[in-house]
Amino acid sequence: MSLQCGCDYDYDAEWYYEARSTPKVLNRKRRTYCRSCRYRIDHGSLAHPFIRWRSPRTDVEERIHGDEVPLAPWYMCPSCYAIYDRLAGIGVCVNLGDDMRELLDEFNRDYAPRGFSLIVRREEGVL
Image 1: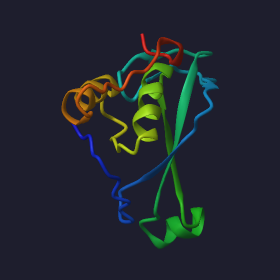
Image 2 (image 1 turned 180 degrees about the horizontal axis):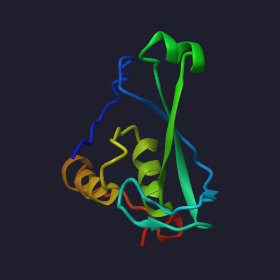
Image 3 (image 1 turned 30 degrees about the vertical axis):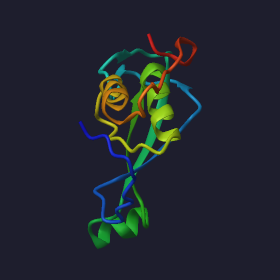
């Protein structure tokens, strides 16, 4: 698990990302999987994209792409994104590849104040 109470904005990270809060219809020839729970997201289903990029590694990459080399986007199903959004909203940093359901359980078990439980409602996507 990689639940962290504070975000360390490391400027030498391997790659960076930006979460898109608005879901988009997956319009690809092939289906993809939720980066968190591995749920299959089919063509035409809603998914939350995470736009990713990295710094150029060579002069050639810098001449072609500039300061940001685009990477393939990652997607989350609405259920996992609802949990991600809740955790990010209270300042908890997570790794995108971790199972958000397990991170929510870990937060409620180990980090939540006594008598407090972070709940994500069914309307927000949790099954």
